[in-house]
Image (cartoon, rainbow, N blue to C red; front, side):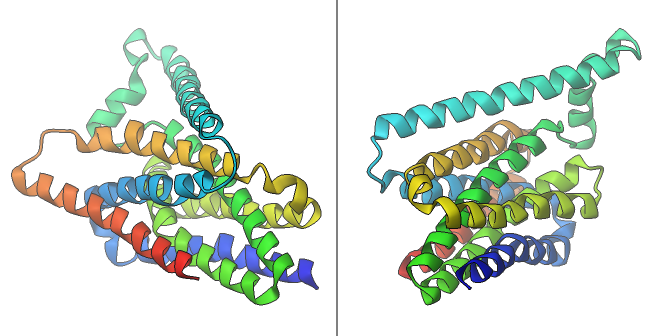
Length: 265
């Protein structure tokens, strides 16, 4: 019975939040791509700094260990990026040496991003979703009602952050919404895996939860700072700059508001 509830709760939270985010980001807001990039950067940074890291640091784990994990995470996603770009430039190398840096010309000309940010996002999402699954499972094991509240909190909580993910991934899959939704949904489905593993190993895994949270945070920080914000750094008018800052603040504000609600429970 508890396992059934965990599966339902984790699937609803993990995949429901992606579909809700898709409705919001590809519906009314789809026209404002540049603004959505700022929103995505704000949502990812907000999720990392205002939700994942504080939660990790509330644990009994030594801050030194958590900061070391954060550093390892950032370096790992940087290397993942390098591997992706290196692989990419080699593919283009055959078309004449001028194409060695093709992804970056692409990046400048069409506002496309290199594909690697997508891998970092999906890796971070999967780790984050796995951690969410363990959290939801442990809440259900403690008390059924608490489990439903936790699942609902995760669902609502993930929406602004998944909006950010979808916007990033859609730009990387040649504007294909469906591919972006499927990719993020698959990462969201890892929540159910986390739920099952959490159900079986809740006592052993609970100690590692802070590390999952920090690793997920490192991927979102990396994508926001290495992939999204550089694209907002291009020379822009005062009005455009003000809009960028406003949307960045909205992204952070959305995560803050949802964090407050989640913690109120």
